[in-house]
Length: 375
Image 1: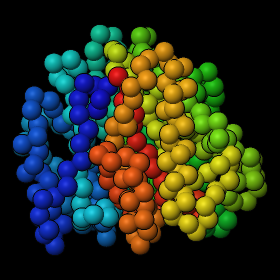
Image 2: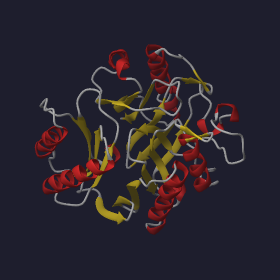
Image 3: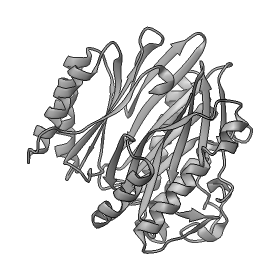
Image 4: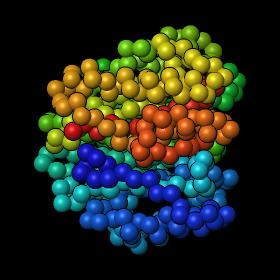
């Protein structure tokens, strides 16, 4: 990751093998050619997993193969979001061991890497809750683990600056309950008022076809770092939505999504803006209904508001910014060409992956997240 003086790369299979495991093996074979003096600490595998059992079996094999290259424990996540350009994509994160000391931390239902340098600590972790229970209970388990991981390493819950929330069947309804809304209710309860003074994390809430709930996070403990939330003046902050746009029966437990549109971080002169999962929302309403091209243009416009010249100038840093990488989540496979062509018109050479996933509102066709590097 950039602020760890590291790298963030996407590896695509070089072959067209029909078997998923063969494409994964090809991605793994590329790791030894890429890693040059920096250490892998996290790998995400985006895949179309049909069953939990087959996915877990494959995950164990993959971990052993990558471990032979890395030589130390790392975080491996299998995320059930089929890539739209191949059968599997590996997202690989590196850090610089000459600057940061990394320590692996294991938990029964989660894992993390603790990075330390000059009295600054960064905790990057992944939590999986995948039991045969409803989404609310799975979210409870995930946040219990999150709280435990943070507490044992001396991090406050308000130290989280970036979060990814992957939710199986994100907008399914059961007995008047939407899975994303159930997740938000639990998140609000665990967050409490901890973020009132510092602003919420940047975050993505996105669907998976399988796998329960995965919560991934970056937490920061530092007296010298500067981090603060960024608003888009054309959108209502998600945590300030009216109850009109929240799904489900009206009761006191129904809460807003607790995240910021983006978040700025300046750590050891490494400056970055985390762009949350962004969609075609103006104010608090979805726009561009049934029109993937219009929704993509509006989404990209919203993203550009988050690193506009006015925003960059407010941080008293150089206006030389570059969009570092992106994930583009597409609901319907048939919209891929339309959406990807528009994205490339705006961001020609940007490293990007296109993934098929349901989005938090059933009328949304595309969501985009990413990272902006400031130099």
